[in-house]
Image (cartoon, rainbow, N blue to C red; front, side, top):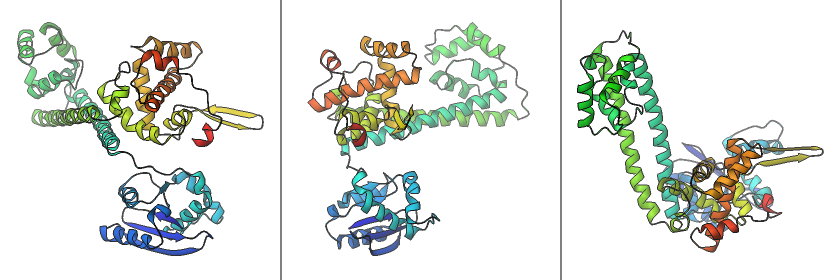
Length: 406
């Protein structure tokens, strides 16, 4: 039996199909606990969940978690790939919930042996992944909030932005909280500003004369807003930036605790210039790929740092791989770029690539591939990273079937 599950936020449609392609059953239900529970119970009547694979157009979410928990093999189908297959069921490419669940079941029946199945990720890795992803979201929110604060100051209080180099630093936020408008800072002198900085443990090593000159040389605003409104706008935005920075610190602590107890951490913690957060990102994003890969080349390809070759007749094009785990690629490429500043071996790989006229992003991906081979060797052997051992064995011969496996 093959199951096609067309999911949505409010309703779902499920089709059960047999080996001949005949529809055995089909039903629609709402996105409620009762609906999901009754559907899982219905599916159990057709056999053991382990023998009932489910095709669905997503890789994550509550439905996927419930299916994995119930023991069903989950086969994620990319929406673009599924859309490209629609002509096989009719030239009109008609789309309905009932039709899509039927097409998913049929696609699973005919092509399921080519499609990868989701493997349940270990709880420790899954929790670390969730923490690092939320931290990345909060970092993006902090950047947006700081940019909004900068735009607000450019329009109404340019001097407030110019005093300190980093607008989201503790000292800059404290200054804006104390002096949110040009009028509030009108009586500041170099001595008063230097004394204020001393009380707030300023570590920038700039004297008050330099700081006050930055403030006075900034353009004078011509805002038509009242002082009270500007004060409120600035203080509210400062409060937002502070709150996001506080959540990031909480997440940093949680990630550090999760990394300290993760079984993969000791294997990779000695890699040069790998911080706790980056280590957590690498384990959380690359760990699941590592666990399901059969060869190092498949592992590297699924991480997204290997280009794609398209050859047909006399045409041959090597291009950037867009279909990949973007978060995993960012984690390993970011680490690779940092590692070249602390490792002569990494620096040589990067510099050789640059000497071969590779642009920085390409050279960083080449170095990332080398580090992924190291990570694969550490994981495969269960040994901690050792520069002499793993660098010497870094060059792994490509598996001729790696592209098919990936």
